[in-house]
Image (cartoon, rainbow, N blue to C red):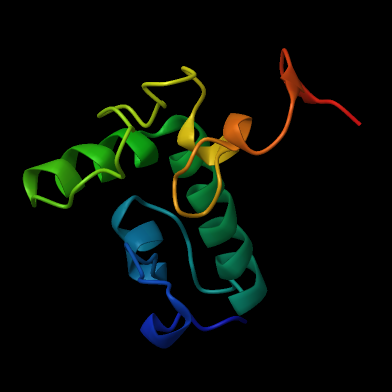
Length: 108
């Protein structure tokens, strides 16, 4: 099992416990640690994919006053090119300034 450590840049959001399953009526007497790890992994995947992880992170960070990178709007899009910041350099600068792009593909 991997351990989430702040010194690695990761911070835990929540956890799941056998008591959580029991509180919902599940028989946890034979539930293994491996099953719990798989449950936690799947729950995390669903939260990120469908459960509002990105929206809640962006909203709360904004409420806390964490600033956006220069040239990036509140939804994470570049005000110059309109592409999402995840397609930009680590410092948030527009990769279209560095190389030639055609549509969604970088020219070779």
